Length: 253
Image (cartoon, rainbow, N blue to C red; front, side, top):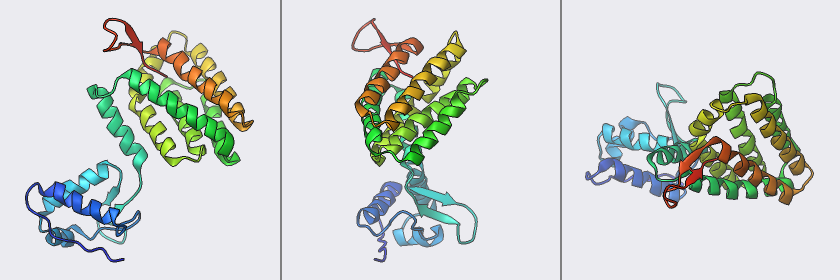
């Protein structure tokens, strides 16, 4: 089905360009992998300046539905993609930093998501997906691993289990929620008193979690991942809860 581009009104032009492109996606005329016409062709069709068009394309790139390749040749230009994980993670991280969501909200969201993903992974995970999680765990237990690398591998381990659950949205949301507090968790890991003991405890639970998923014991895996998240958040991060006055509220690992 050919894409039919229509001129847009000049008022708030970049938003109207966004709306027009969204309508083409909703109508099924633009799909992942499709390329947009070059700017020099698309701007006159919309009836907007190239600067307004570029602004709209930058917004689409930021939210993970478009990638722009500069230069010339068959790979140059803007292409529709599906890349929600990084975009949602960036968005949540900014809103978390701005105070739109508190640590308590992030904690409870992560508990709900990961209980669901670990239980589902025990039912649906492919052996290859769990082998990849096992490879991440093997890197986490190596001597000399430092907080930044550990934090990255820890995130990837939990996201990999969510991916293996068979629910793409759960995987994306798990990644976004974990990414939103990545800097905070890294800072907390860097400040622990006994790094070796901390990582040993975390890795022991990671190992047991993976064994439970492989054995198909979903409810036990769900219970353990909740204990895993709640057990460490209180020791790593402490922040006042706005609804509790001066009482403490904790973040998470």
